[in-house]
Length: 448
Length: 163
Ligand SMILES: Cc1cc2nc3c(=O)[nH]c(=O)nc-3n(C[C@H](O)[C@H](O)[C@H](O)COP(=O)(O)O)c2cc1C
Ligand code: SF4
Ligand code: FES
Image (cartoon, rainbow over all chains, first blue to last red; front, side, top):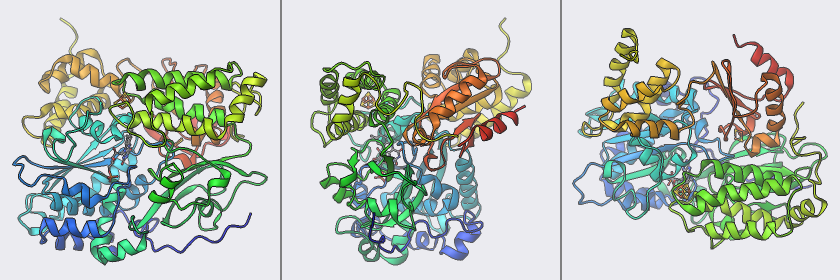
């Protein structure tokens, strides 16, 4: 198929990736203007810093796309308690593997962004939370933090100013729910990651009961370039409502999976087919479906892919840009099996606090598995949709019946898969087998 | 009297590292150190034995149940002693699209274990997405990451390299 070439991109985040020693402070200073922006920002008024970030149209890269400057402005100015920055490096949304590139290749870009964010919200302590499985990445970040302390960038007098700044690494221990912002806070507090009922929002009462901002790694890494080149420059790189570029994590059935920094107006088709990015489908295969923003994002069919990988455009398609995880499924793939894999994950990772999520997720996973194995009954699809609706009553928007958005994250894929690929589910039920092959536990995906 | 949790050397290492960890948290929030302390405990003992959990709780000034609750919530903490190698195979969607399910079946046969089972040598588990979807199938052995495991030969060579 012919797809127009992807638009050119001016890289903001990935410029130094793959260059020798790009993770070292010396390189960061010599080649990337390292910490000159923080030095300048430390002399600015917090309100001016927040205004600049608002003007840049930077939106959170953790999943929800919330405007960063606006989030910072919710921190109350008159609260005498200490404030905290919590950095979300949990990176556990299936299909997402971008933050680790920042942590591996240029941890100082994030650390400088942390300094900028701390000055803006008046926080003197930041906790960088990395998922427990990130061993190499944790070593990189810890080494970079130590370099920054040694150079006097962090410490009681950050960069020679009277602003105190301490940055600590915290490692998780294997729980997806700790990526949810209040689950993350609970985990930093040394507890199991049970999300909190909101309000109060973390900006008012977060870590240790104090005002806290939670930001994603990529969000923070976008800050030094914004203060280097100006908010207008960053805003202009993007679309009307989202500034900058995006990191896309391309995986699944495609010739060249990987992380690519793309311009916000790049479409899913371009990411799959462009020579700079996915380089098309494996020989003889066609796209059947794409999940555009991590496995929580409702699925798109092959004829819905001429859409920009950007917050607003994907919202129009009733799905979401989420964490940038683009998962490609080809025409040999069983959609029931795919949905089972997705739903099983949410069933495993439900923290168990809310009844609809705790009971509903395993129930849905069980029904899907039953259908996949050819044991499904005609009424199972309705039951499945009813259970999904009891968790997320207003598809495609979230705001379901649960404490946190994991409920929606698990229910929305079910609703979208069944709506868009209903005939495949029905074929499994009618034929009493998986039409794609000799399941259960036969072949799924290529493996030699 | 029950056996002590640690040998004297282990106790010394534990105490020194505990003191360092506690500097990262507000003085009245010792319990926040739970995750790093359990991780450190596991580095020393290989798992989180009940006596050790009680001791951690005491040091962090919380009830013993709290230490156990946290240790059992997170999959990377072991409240029962695992085999020498903990093998976590990602079978989430992107890796499954690249054959992770077949890889798992191969490992089940090879190790004589079903996913979720263990013996003295191995604990074999299905893991959730390990943020390595573009280089799947992938797995971790005792937190060391191995990727692009797209053939039996590669998997067999990897396991042959374990002592
Ligand atoms: C179940 C669940 C899991 C999440 N996992 C992550 C994650 O792994 N990393 C992340 O940055 N945000 C994650 N989020 C989003 C966070 O709650 C939060 O919105 C984000 O960290 C805010 O940062 P940002 O505004 O910079 O995007 C998750 C949300 C939910 C509901
Ligand atoms: S929605 Fe699910 S994961 Fe979120 S708090 Fe409720 S039970 Fe826990
Ligand atoms: S699906 Fe296996 S690492 Fe993401």
